Length: 306
Picture 1: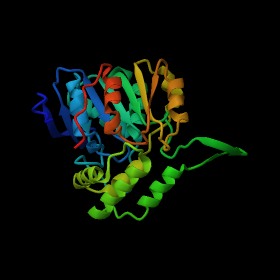
Picture 2: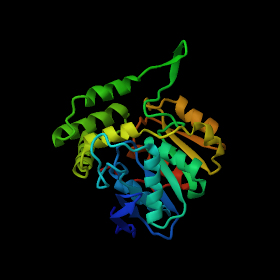
Picture 3: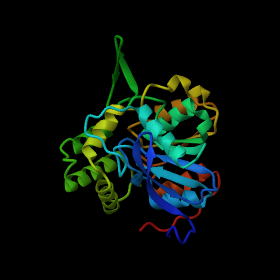
């Protein structure tokens, strides 16, 4: 189903944001309530599937997705450039400013979820509702559940999934298209579950991500160094907008302790489990559930997977 068939406006454009150029794309009518999608670490807007965005727009939202700095067509920086999670948050706010949007529904995945939390805490007037997917309560990028303590030192274990991811990507040449595409596929599959797209679908996505990126190696390094920014966990109790927490039952990057803590510290928040989903953008198999939860109304039936 095309955007034209659904009567939706889709535009991609470069805009000056927070002192850089950001590439953004919109779906739907500007008269509808705005919804901003915030992608994960070193992830371009390509990870938010085109049809998923159209279906959000068909549900009565003006959907905005964008390339984080150092991803996609947004401004790219040399490897080792210093910026912070606060800069990434300000980029998101700048996208809203550039479009003349005073407040929006925020939907953030992983790092994007951490940025959404920070916006809700530091700029509450910019948030209509909050949807946090596969994320944690303001933890750092390498945070894992504390399993034991040795003296005053907390001992953390790295889940087998993350070991597989690191093993699969350690030897990747991110400047080489074939190597980078294979690395992206391996990374997604290692963190996914039974509903993760098959290899041909992932290959198409990975090729699109690579072709739209200036320097994947620099993006990955710079985002990892930027992290989430200063902790906001102790301030999450101040969030007073409707908050939805969507979390995969197979997510080993942020196991169940993480979404449970979010649900505990954010007043009135609601935790919804995505069965069979790993640490990944919600796969097509759970779109109906995810769309229903985000939009607050029954989702339209999905067309068969291509």
